[in-house]
Image 1 (cartoon, one colour):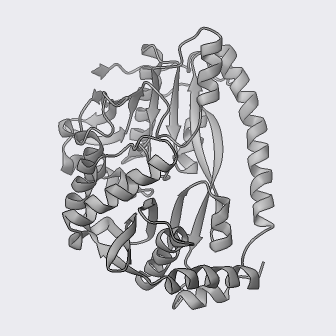
Image 2 (image 1 turned 135 degrees about the horizontal axis):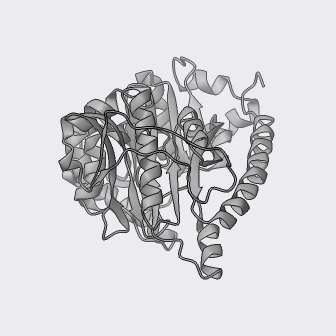
Length: 402
């Protein structure tokens, strides 16, 4: 699909009355339904050039989601990658999907969809820019130059106006890209995650020494319970992970979803694919008891950040979750001088383990003027609540100097 150069203002965005004129000059825009149409080298070259790059933006991770069927049109994630080219060179791109539901997004708009339903209006299909099932901030407006970024935003505006989408949503962009989208007529929404920051700790005990006495005591007690139960741990790097390790991890992953009466998003083929193509980014933490594995967590990392993704167990022991999903990964960060551990979505309990609140962003455009105005008012109130919530969390900072 080729989109013509055009200018205009986002239709239906009644909360923003400004005219928006972003002209596409000397660029060709295109939508493709498969990463294979772009090519690994072209995609990874653009993705790696971004300041807000992480492994989830890589060709290997996204292709594994699509080719395994975990994020496919059949699963309600229809890929519609938006490209900006100059000649044959990829100058900008956006991971983009047509969604027929709101599962796997971690920025919740179920109430919005229900409001549409109650008023006899369709909320789906909607347009979504995100990394499926991955609440990690990273570049969504991937561009080599500001001009290419402007062309990408204009192309997005053209797509959403030319098609019958109720709305467009961009999830977990960095703040500066969220501000670009706000200027283009999107409404911003903030959220909270909890991240651990490495202050150059020599070992886990030095990290513990920075926490207040109660937090320190609780963590030591939790770790002692696991050790006294006779549990040991293996840190399995991607290159060393066997198919048996992946099959056991998938068993643990499925068990976690079953306990919450949910259906797993990801299949074994996906995990095998990233295990083969992203070995340098993979860490499996496997817990063993009486000579057999009983729990496992999957983490993705690069040189600066460790990302907690999934965990599960087939045998419950006190504090096993904290040790497998938090304390063992923290030891890995300290030993490998990784600066940040992003523990995943939500979870105030992480603060008691040294994690601190961080604001996240999403951007939203709705075609229906009345709903756009109502949601704009809601988001303004919600933003005040988020800011107050972060202030309250920071008042309970777990570190001694606080």
